[in-house]
Image 1: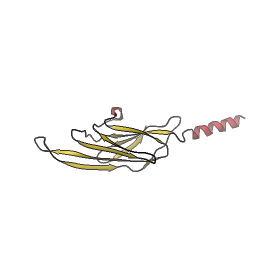
Image 2: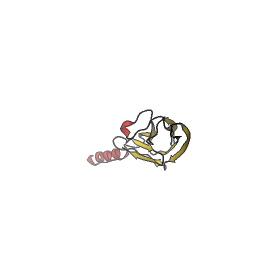
Image 3: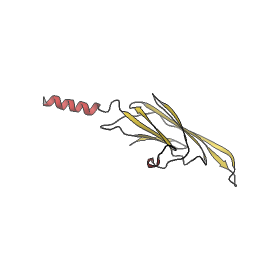
Image 4: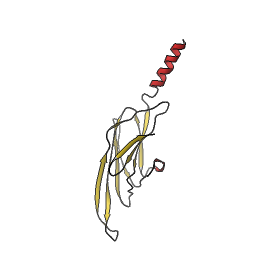
Amino acid sequence: MKRMVLLLAVFLMIFAGCGQDVQFTVYNSTGINSASGLIWLHMSSDSIEKWHSATTYADTIEQLDETNSFTVKIKENETVNVHVEGKVYVRDSEGIVTGYDEFSADSSPVTVFGGFPDAPRWFASANKESIIVFRR
């Protein structure tokens, strides 16, 4: 009987994370706000696709809000791709916009996973050259 309880406990610990909802947050870390350019964040997974126009940026995850990021819930073991594109205004010596420079970056596909007892939060930090995906 003790052996059966021990096996059940081990089984529950191993499989408790299966099928968890995972929070995935994409945020603008380009240093560009709406006064200096335009930023579009895009995230797609096996079950969802979302675009977001960021008007501010965040240097750290403590600065995240609805103007610089968005969060979605997805199931663990989904594959996620993140894309950022934008335009940075080019100004002359008097501050008048004379054009813009375009940029874009893509992440490598990432498979998110849960944890025990709680699922970690996943983040994608989008800047002009690359996208860094990490979990906390």
